Amino acid sequence: MAKAAVSRSAFRGLFAFYAAKAHHDHNVEGENCLLKLFGSADDIPDRLLQRWSDEVDLMGPETVGHIMEPHAHQIAEGNAHYDHASDFLHALLRDLGQKTQ
Image (tube, rainbow, N blue to C red; front, top):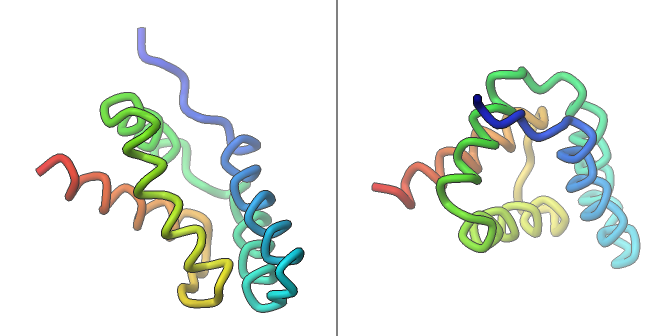
């Protein structure tokens, strides 16, 4: 039986965490971008969440953290912009895929 996909709420928590950090750092642009992603996380397709869960299982949390953290920091610092949470997730999955090649 396949493992259930990560919940949208759990994925949204990532954006909330980094938005709080951007707020603490007085980075209004980064905070607003992260809050936009927080709101759009409700619309991430199920297949994408399942793919994310499968990749995390294969790679392990430490490797995934090393890939995810720089992406999230780039958003918080205003150096990267994504129109939707699924765009962010696609970028992470692309980088995870490159790590396995």
